[in-house]
Length: 429
Image (cartoon, rainbow, N blue to C red; front, side):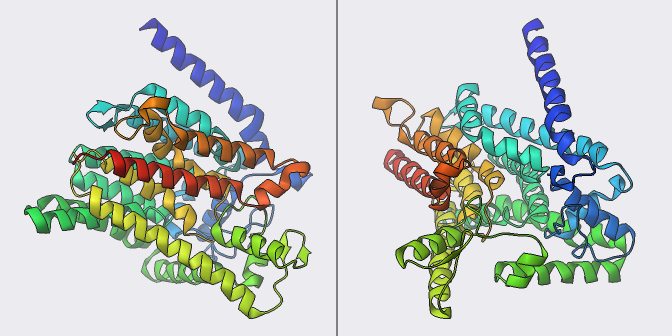
């Protein structure tokens, strides 16, 4: 008991020191705006715009960055309007840390193949994904909350609390749309299983929880907070901004301060575009290749679309095969893979988005039932570890080419291939 108290005390002190020394300093406003390095004030600026009856998607934080997420997150920040940024950052940091801790505890207790995953596997995953978690905290990103909601949804689903699982995934999707992919994989698997074996209650409860969360998050809460007409107007603006960003409207990229071609963006389109520039000896403006014609740009778009749709198809296929029932041995693996696959779908995949690899890496590190028994943890976690290490090494000017080449993205694809292939090989007959 005393040992546990000491461990928790050390964690609390370390978290407090980390916040005061790093996270808080990034949120403070001072004479040099370049020292203000947090996205949390983007959410706060959007909330302030809502409070002033202005367009949240026109609001800008002190660095000039704009809000692009669904309205719910800005609405949830309304109670923090008027707070000093460093104080608002404390509240957000506490919520994010609690979400991450909840995810880690739930993962350690998760039963994969009959036994709990355990602390060692989770510790390995934390070590491998530590850089992504660190950058998420520094930037005040929403990723930790999304990780917590989805892992808790997985735990609820495996515990046959289907309504709760749907609710958690629906709320996560209302904060950032990507959790709809694991939700769709789970739903498809459950429906097909019910059609084959009977028993429609589980998937109906899951669908009910998911639908309720989406209605509350996209309709009821905005209407209650903003009024019906204002809620509809803000929702329409979000759809417009999201569509234009994904379509790559250049002036909007400039307006929202999103540099797609920074090596830190480890999304397929950016990497394919960079390789296309190298292969065809194109000119570069900074890190942006200058495509000579629309055909070249369309080719890059086409290949990135192929990868994106392949990722969606893989998530749904794994859902169909392994997510029909929560006691299936490979169900947590399919869920974890579906959580990570959105990095291959979206146009923008920053380091913090790769934190979604943590559950899959933990499952791979646990060994059962998809381990390479002769060599311990096996190559899949090692591949991801090497990719992450190369990516952070690429932050030095001498090794920047590694990041430009997409070392993290390539490691992620290889990790997923090894992981899924071995799981399929080791699945029970």
